[in-house]
Length: 358
Image (cartoon, rainbow, N blue to C red; front, side, top):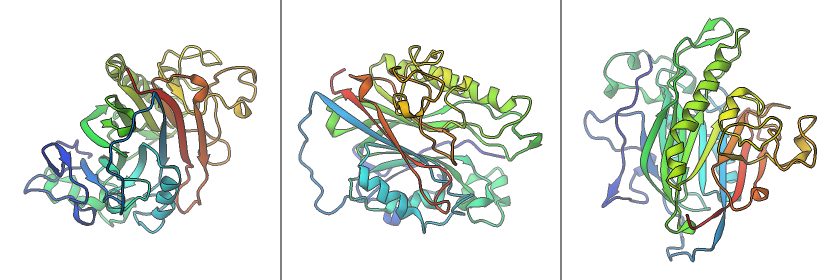
């Protein structure tokens, strides 16, 4: 049984999250306020600049998405997480989306001092009864009382930003019914995109809506999981239409468990993206690298549903989608392979040029 989280913890005064207010990354909860959704802030690095930044006409919006495989690969430990944070500091992204993060790993990220800046971050659980994060039993989490949960049984998504988070929006994307791997039932997940409105100093008054997502996994001969992923992607893209219409810059990153040409991706790729287009509103970070077009698109195509591998030796399952740009040719991506002991997914970097005026 997976319980839906009911609340969010924010350490704040007058609406501002206080740097370092969460000691050692631990969430300070009042009695009865235990939740699988929290917000933490990382301590500010020594000497961090506090002056207001001049706002340029355009900004290269830097994003990373990484399924850290925190349970299956890292077993809930934090030993290998410095590999991830070193990659973060080398790139200095504005937004970070992590998937398959055990709760104690989220706490570690929250307590970590990034040299690239101060990050606020939120967590939501996909599973609250998962033994792969280090707990030998999660039976206590199966009762109706979340206040006694063993949080070592929590695994889910993290959304983070080098700015201010507000307006938490957990978008239910469905797909909870009849979850199978092949023909075998699996421990049921709760599928939500974890989204926040983000204020970034470099963007002035513009608001970014960032979402971390992890769609349904597994394959089966009847296409049950593929239909579920297609419905999940369409639901999420539809729910974000209002934010795009409201002139927010919407960025979605995560593990879609889908190939670029799968029907699930139609709801994100724009109509002009070859082959066959889509009915979406988004530019994908790796859509214009003709080294990976293969036979799908001519090398002269401006955009192709393709990209470098992000999983194993040949599979692209990880994506960063941007809702707008001042120049589609500005989009770029770089998947960086990490050791199998860190993750089976690559650390995925994306960038696109956006306007600072709506």
